[in-house]
Length: 200
Image 1 (cartoon, rainbow, N blue to C red):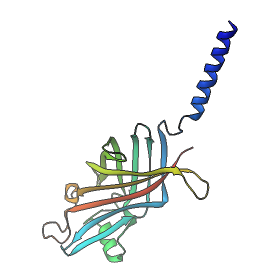
Image 2 (image 1 turned 120 degrees about the horizontal axis):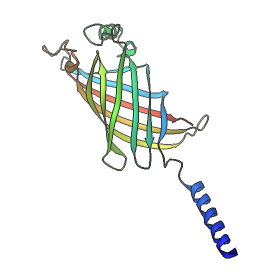
Image 3 (image 1 turned 45 degrees about the vertical axis):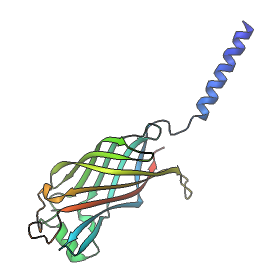
Image 4 (image 1 turned 90 degrees about the vertical axis):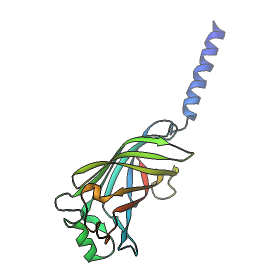
């Protein structure tokens, strides 16, 4: 009987130690985008000469991610249409108008992720819906998981770094200005770079 008790004690101790040594990321954890390390940008052709770069300066979002199973969920990202910036005041004013983003009527552009599919060591796709100009259409982003680690500065929070790319046709949302005469490209390249802080 004493031998059995000793065995059970050893087993319990082993289980406790194993639990303590288990990686902290072996579960789904939620993150918030870090506004100080965030880029949501786009490239669009201008009269066929070159592509114009722009970005949204006011963006917020969150998601949950299990690093072990690489399962992504609850992806929510919103951009303020008024915050569009192409580093040209006149062009930005035009982009906020009814010809493009119609920012007064539709102040937010939102992406909601609905599925993720790992396709490589640190690569995969995220599929969801992008809502713009009152229309919600499917959008797939190619995603690279760059790094997850304790941040080396400040409060030493746990962070994750992501790069994502995608494409859409703005005319699908009814944004047809300049498409027929090829003054402004229809294809929009999406560029996303961000760091996100884990919620503790």
